[in-house]
Length: 314
Image (cartoon, rainbow, N blue to C red; front, side, top):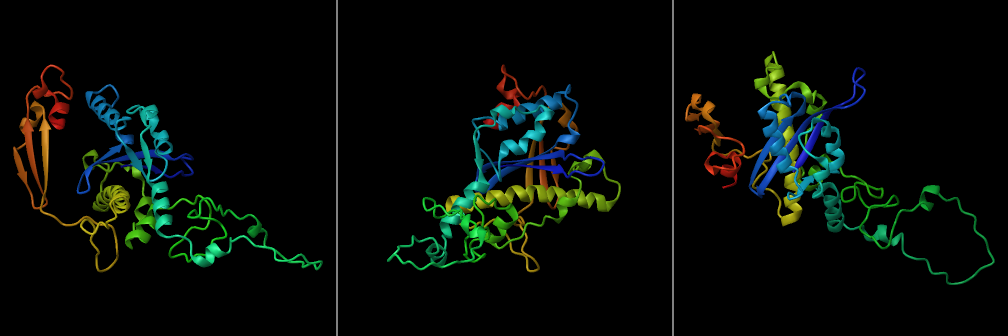
């Protein structure tokens, strides 16, 4: 699952500024790995770290991987092409979850009988010399109803908004509305009014006050929640089961949250620099295990034991 975030245009910056690429590798319905790339804080292109990031992204944005997103992925990635850590021409195996959701929703919520009846053909029973002059709403003459695609949206739809919130052909569902209608949950967008390129990683030290620190943590949480929301929707319709095992319902307000589990466990593989880290760090919220391997490289074609890629794929 892929998503992006950009800073909105301002008076000083009339064009949006690319800020984040969020990546969620979906291993199965219950196990994913999430990565956030802050493109305004990338290392210099001449560094080995940047080369490692580029190698990782080119593996991710490969035609061998199915890349899902809410909307058109290529359009989302175009503003990020300038950073040269992926080849957009290789982004070919894409899946538009927004279109998929609309088809699934419309199939499960067909037009009501009253709505369909408006478009039944009229049979003329007799010919009369009388004339009737009517005042017709011009919008009704531009009817988008297509009998060959009866589940599609159209502008003369009279279905209740509870089952058909959109009334125009090829309407684009927002992710917030899809989550609301499917799970009766809210995806709070107020946090998105902040500046995404501010430097979310606390180790960048772009914050001074505790409030700024908390804002960055909230932005990270939202960026990850955006990915999880799309993933939940995909599995909901793909497996026909609601994600009740993954979502919790707070008493005050229905928000997307992650279920409380045992402390998270992280495993770090490093080169010899990792020897300065304690082998195990235990806190109430996570456990960190570090394994340093002298001579470790991201790619080593001669010794798989010193090749990070081989170790991760083994």
